[in-house]
Length: 254
Image (tube, rainbow, N blue to C red; front, side, top):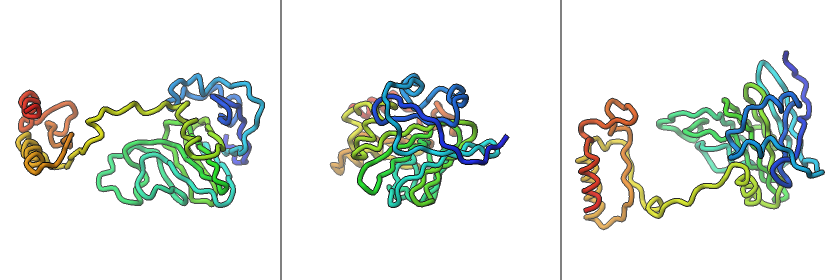
């Protein structure tokens, strides 16, 4: 049955000082799916003994099988984050859908790309920052079109995690990393120049590209082949024109 009345979400402190988990009810909290955002789902599901209340408490509505969560922030708040999407770094006034899409030819208004991260970083007018994570893997609408409001809409009940407010965006991201982990240290070769273009149809063409880089004295650490190398665009296959792995490895060494 739909509950169209806005209500405050219940909360409990988790992880560390300044981090809170919000749910629509205790039943929803107990029924929540394990977290695929936290490196250890127990960190999300285990309250800690800190007697503080959050600075901002989201409200929710249940309508037609959708959970709508709203978080009102001070006027003048700017928004960032929302995952891998097109457009400007600042996301204020934007609407994004977390729905992984092979977005060939995407542009500034494309609302879904290759990865989904239902996360918003809010920078408040006083310079403090707040992070908000909708911990759901379902299709989720992130609506930032209303002044200083974050709104998440997704099917079924889902927890919302807030980080902060903390003194700076950096502090928010440090706290977030305690929940979701950090990026591994990349190998040195991955930091060099990478060449990639859809059109390398054969090993011969890739060798031509590599040889030209060397002849012109242009450093190049990696050459990526797009889906052209596949047999009928089937993953883990190689077209006959690209059945060259052993020979190509010897070519790279020389």
